Image (cartoon, rainbow, N blue to C red):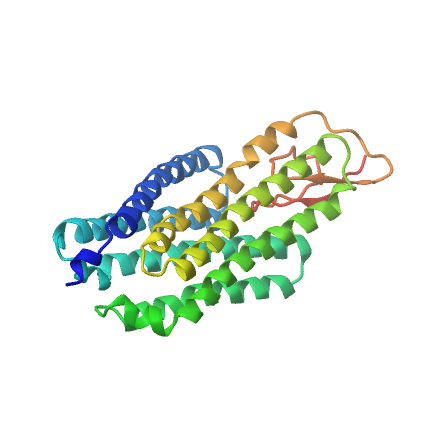
Length: 300
């Protein structure tokens, strides 16, 4: 009796489109990962581990959503009532996607600490990241093999808060980084000011993309609860997080080309702003691998 009410376009069709977009973005993630390993072989093992974990999680996530799509489109073909029970592969994809978001948000939170030497805002960001990661995965594990309506109806307000917290966290991270970078902008001269402006623009772009995606997901979840529109975006968002961190790391190559110009001498000891670029041994600098800006003094 429920079959005539089944709308394949807004459910399976939406999930199919989201999965295809996610597959395409994984290609971009892989190319950026290759570019990172090629351009920055001397980065620390910690930073390389972060990139490795992100790519492996994304690769596994891609396999899981592909399996879930096959299960829902082929295995359960002609049985729309079975779509209420989410397959294990989709639950695994949810865990892996939230893991990617957690790693990326913690990474950028650490960059805030490296810039400000204060733990106040990073602790808030870590708390919001944990809130995005733990509750949904616990709920999905507890309600596995049960209709999705059982937990979506019971915890709908909690999921609303989770998506809102994720968007707020991205805005807080990007906004804080922009404020910290801008506070150092007036201390630079010439090309260094332009370099800071580039970093500010990149920070805004990467933060806005993930935060807007979380806001749209929240809107879909609230306004279109009987469709898979929110689920389609849910399988895409991890790619936005992974590409944001890889773009941030790979942008150092662009900054490097901008810093290869001869540096003027500051006889008065005025501070200059430098980025994570290898320098001659006779130049006093701090090498920070998190694509952050630091204040460095150069002496004659």
